[in-house]
Image 1 (cartoon, rainbow, N blue to C red):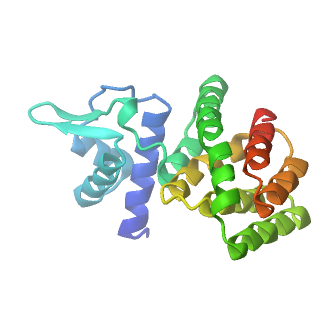
Image 2 (tube, rainbow, N blue to C red):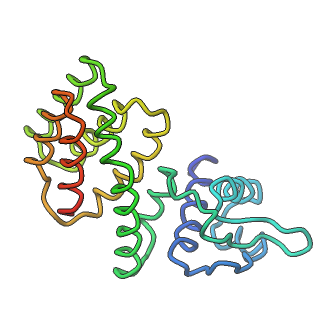
Length: 212
């Protein structure tokens, strides 16, 4: 038997998938609690906790004398790693997924070159060595997991406190990409950051992002 936490996650993930895929459209009223409990075969306590999780992520909103509604997309916490995970599992059309990935790339283009430039000027020698180590690991095993570690390291060493939160979106976007790991650009980026060359670091980030 599933424990309460697993049941809560299963219900919240299922509902999130319906919302993110717009199977349950924006503004739609969620079915009554009794119907949802029967649908997912869970108690009201589990359902309430699942709805609380979705509310905290901005996916639903409760209105007095109206009920619980699917929130406007602008309120969705799309930077949140759990929401991004749900987005991956949602039954989106290829067109919808491509559109979201395009918007994610827009955000990366707005942020990543600047963060690369910041890393070149702010990162300590130890932080630069961390990036070099992440690059070597990626060269040894050029898979998604190691590429995500490398990108997260870039965001971390930028010295900006908000950057690690944005790295969740970058990692999600990388997972949607169909092109190969841009290893030569990552190598050039690492060299530029290690040498404190901010202009070159910025351009390296632009180069590999444009290539996506």
